[in-house]
Amino acid sequence: MRAPFVIGATVAGVAGIIAFHPHGASNATTFNAPGTRAVGGTSSNAGATASGAPPTTGPVPSTTGPVPSTTAAPPGGSSPAPSTTTPVTSTTAASGTASGGVTQYRFGVLQVTATVSGGRLTNVSTQVQSTDPRSQQIDNAALPILRQQALSAQTANIQGVSGASYTSQAFATSLQGALSALGFKG
Amino acid sequence: MSVQVGPEVLLEKEQATLHHDERVMGTVVSFDIRPGTLPLPEARRALRLACVSLARDDAVFSLWKPESPMSRLRRGELALAEAPDVVSEVLNRCCTAKGLSRGWFDPWSMPGGLDPTGLVKGWAARRALDVLVEAGVAAAMVNAGGDIATAGSPAPGEPWRIGITDPADLSRLLCVVDSPGAVATSGTYERGAHIVDPFRGLSRARWRSATVMGPELDLADALATGLCAAGAAGAPFVLGAGYSAIVVADTGVARVLGEAPIR
Image (cartoon, rainbow over all chains, first blue to last red; front, side, top):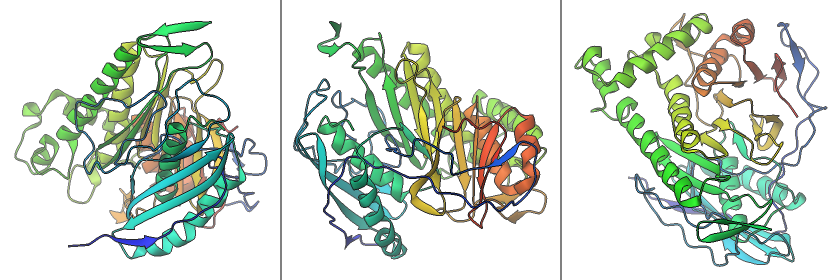
């Protein structure tokens, strides 16, 4: 039996929502297929936030209130209620602290707590429980970067993330839940 | 001006949204719903029905559940004629995907026997989306573990914008695309090798990740799996099927195949 252990990471900082920046991809050519072109460089709209990105076990607070689910309620419903909620119509000057859902990823669960002050994200912390030693390496590398990304941009420009990434999606999902609970809109 | 929506008053331009995460199919499926003129209670009801749809499909197709019809079919304990109708439907879609991918997506060549998993997740997510659309929501997105089906516009004139994870740096996005209806990513990063070369029976991925975009998520899902296995040889079949793709090589080099809707 694998006992979960807390590996860390309460990080504190300032932020809005996660922003990702596209890489400038290398110009090397790997193959010539019809209609191919390089990605990168020209990719605009780098500011991006992830919402609705799986995997999640806990319900993520919704701006319109909890969604009733009559079927297959997520197990392990350990998500704490957000400490602050704001009505859906709140658009400016959101303030308060809220936690997103306890979000599952490949190697455990994580939960993001966000603090918004005067309409700006001013603090992000992450709690991680891992079930796999390998996760320590990944978390240690990924979470500070994710936090910094969240700190460095204040806009929410995307609705979803496609990819096989677990850590970043879990972080984004939980953060999005926290921000939604605060009525925060980047 | 305000619009009365059930017990809640929503300002004009303030679209109500429903967000829900459902743990199912070995992953989490996220819903993002814009009810539009559909009253919120009806939108919530549609969401519940969509979750029921996912749970039903999971019960039929899960290979992690030994008692599922798909598992029993695989073991030869169940004849196709005795299986639920959706099994034939999925196998027909698999057949279509196998043809479109010129054999690079082949559920019949998987180790351990028939395995339509590479298509089922996208297929089930699309069915869940259809439940919402048929109920009358203005727009919705279903994100099944990174495989995304969308309908409508999240805001007037706005597409659903989807970030594509950079496999070289999971904290970043490679780019952002406007969803054409379906965005599916296959890859070996974080989940390890699960890509099979159907011609050699080897666990093998030639792309670190492959994201396929087009109209239908089940086919996008299957084509992404096939493209990962096929590598550069996969470009013609993706384009021929009317889909586009963004692929990342092990070197970190990213390429676009076809007219991908990159912002």
